[in-house]
Image (cartoon, rainbow, N blue to C red; front, top):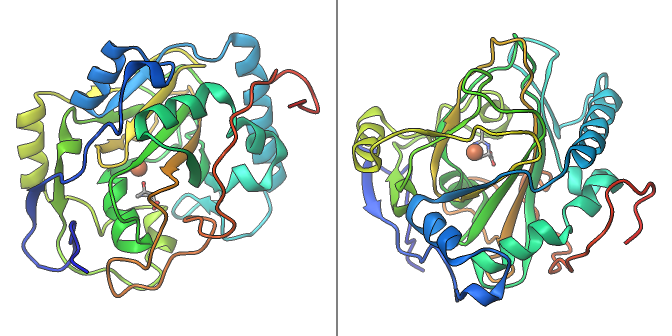
Length: 308
Ligand code: 6CS
Ligand code: FE
């Protein structure tokens, strides 16, 4: 089978055009997003929906996030990622499986209906995580396309996934918000070759392979015209296309920046063997077991235990 998106096979990086649509089977009536939102997403590769969750809901979400972090503070398991050279928690993966609250949240109709509308099919979660970026100490995420990693290391066949980041703290210019290059999802940067074994153990702390070269980044930036930032109040939700070039700076401000992050993949785009010689990454990063389409639910976040 030919690989539509080869990467890390040559020492010389290059850029090819995207070979998949951005929106699938799209018409406005198939979900909650309006035509102008769909157009924005198609053109730019992301969409920030301000205040999708109310202040009361954000309080509950933040409490659950803190609880999860406290629960894992001293736990040494592979799905809990700490910062390089410190005990500070950077990310907790697989929250849609390991915590009841986040499991339910991942089926919330507000999120799922949008993911279905963008991807034109039923969806499932291929990866979930909570990212903490504490004040003073939060570290950066270097520029990358998620799809490049998911294709090469996890065997995601096509660009038909969307990440959904629920912003739980106000995001300012100065507390390390996500930065995105508009329109970069239309191009695929073929990164230079070489990936160490068990790459994820290092890349989740600091990614150095499967990242674009500086020339390609400059090229994407010239095309896109600017670096956009996902700034906005807590409760906003950012949907971003799996191939958009993004990253974030460290956080030396006193204000934390944390988010919950679900990756919805089309049920028609399930993972295969990696598009490389690498062994598949663990289940907590790339879900393959018991894949079922999500049934969207509407429920009240403040009910505890949550009633579906
Ligand atoms: O490894 C992953 O699946 C995600 N994390 C990083 C640091 N890069 C690629 C992707 O976003
Ligand atoms: Fe990413």
